[in-house]
Length: 126
Length: 211
Image (cartoon, rainbow over all chains, first blue to last red):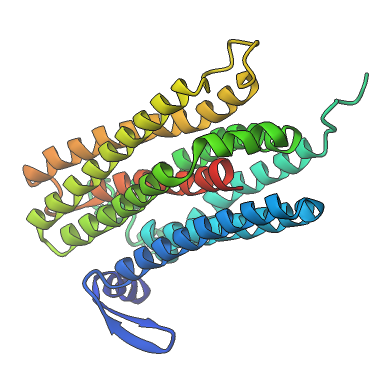
């Protein structure tokens, strides 16, 4: 009960503790998260454009740069998604059962992706 | 065998008439939405896997598609959807603080964000159609293999945004009549759906337009 009330208070407070400093902004943590999402999106798009140019200019390193690009951009996308799920969907204050409900299909989907990616493009040549 | 008495029953389960408490009712409603979203994860995952496999095997076509697609319009659209997610959570916050007018304003902005997103998607599809990037029924087209992989997840997502806009309008209608004044669970359920649609777009935007 006390935990629930603490989360309720956090949701409605305009003061947020960020990097060791307390800042007050209308909307509190929700506004801070939106700012983070916007900044991460700008970083994501600029990184993609920069790496696309680098891949074009350095064809001999294209495979490595493409791998770096994929890992970097997917990493940023996962951080953005997690921010939305954790703060906007309030998974932070939900019961652990909800986390299981959402993580289980993600796990199954992840394993399925790994399995499907392991199939060679030409099939097994049966 | 241990005797079952009222002391052993959960305190919040039911009142004297067997009715659920409001808290339990709300938790059940939210769990239902989360389970529905879990099924949506599986459906979107299938489409995403299809695209990833195509992306790995057909690098040249995807690189060409990236040149044609560009990122200007879709980035602006992404910002609109992220902003609508922010408006949504602010709407819920306003209602939890007893501010019905504020909730109506924020949810109205959420619906508007969804409409603008769909408008942007329509413009994008029109431009792509002009470039010949259409569904893959014309096997003579160089885009025949790309079209379906691109349109299936993005259109399916757009359909979810459309449903979300309708839901937002219904929340506005009910909210204006005071339906959520005492219990904003209906807004929270819509919020879970809307944020999920946002999360899916975050992944699609990165996978299809950037990687």
